Amino acid sequence: MRPIQYRADVEFVQALRCVEYRLPKKDGFRPRAYLAALALRYGLMGAAATHYLLESTDSCDEPYVLESVMAWPKLIADHVSIEVGRRLGHDDSYEATLLLARWSRRPLQVTVPLYRRCYPLEVCLQAAIEDFSQEFEGPISEGSRLWNKRRAVQRFMDEAAQSARYALNFFDRRQHGLEEVPEIALLDE
Image (cartoon, rainbow, N blue to C red; front, top):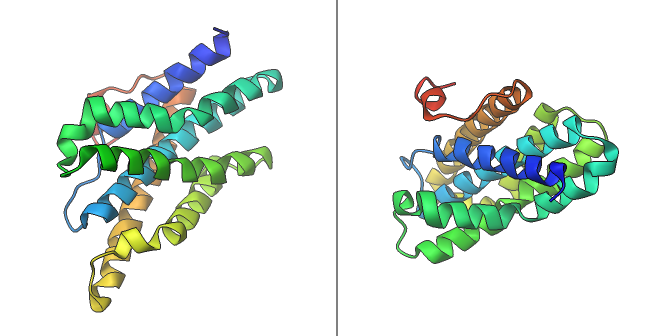
């Protein structure tokens, strides 16, 4: 194993722990909208970890970082099934895990090309949120009546903004070499 592969594993595990300590609240979400909010949070944390890795490594190590990015959905599936699946409370946790893993890939598909064009992380995260909310508009407002769709979308966007804040704070902690511990989440960053 190359040193960059080990570093990538460490950074992605830290990102998973960050989400584990900061799961979105289920209040006001339909089941699939909650999965979309959680998938976005996982995706934004993965984007922050990727951004940090690409920024802090040599260009010759970039292919190894991108290889690790390809494994991000599998890491999420394993993490959800082992660590947080019982806290989700879905009837079919296997299907929910697969959806989370698949949907969480989308923010990385948006942010990695933007990083290569030298966009800052904040801009990358915002672009990922906009793309994700358009791509998954159906699940976000699914089951809401016409007059409640706006409220469902607003609830999702509020949670997305919170996820972006967590990702930026996670990125700052990674730059300073701080570990993800539950106490930081209890203090609300």
